[in-house]
Length: 150
Image (cartoon, rainbow, N blue to C red; front, top):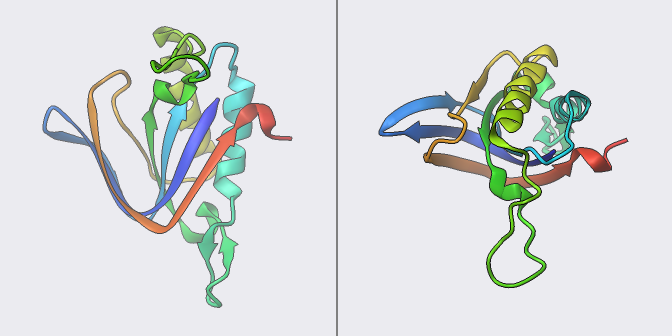
């Protein structure tokens, strides 16, 4: 399971002209579910994201987490994170989980974020053509892969 995490001042996701998720300060999480990913991957990834210390404290040092700042989260499914671009010019998405499996783990990941203590967890619509608008703060962008977490 792969996640691109962007620290934002605000962000929203729109589907067919309607806002489906919107947050203030916190993280925009682009989530890619790969073949073989499990609930354990979602648990591990959500737990790590909730405590990542990338928000600034009173000394302008990155010492605070989402939990410390009451940060909010917008999770957007993004199978393109599973792209294999090693050959040719067209990405291969064979590594992405099938839609039913991926959607189940995406929903489970969102619940894991809530169980980790994040009060506001918004989401896009799985499989939809989404328009994401964000104000990146920093910018701070971090890439996590559940297979690389301890």
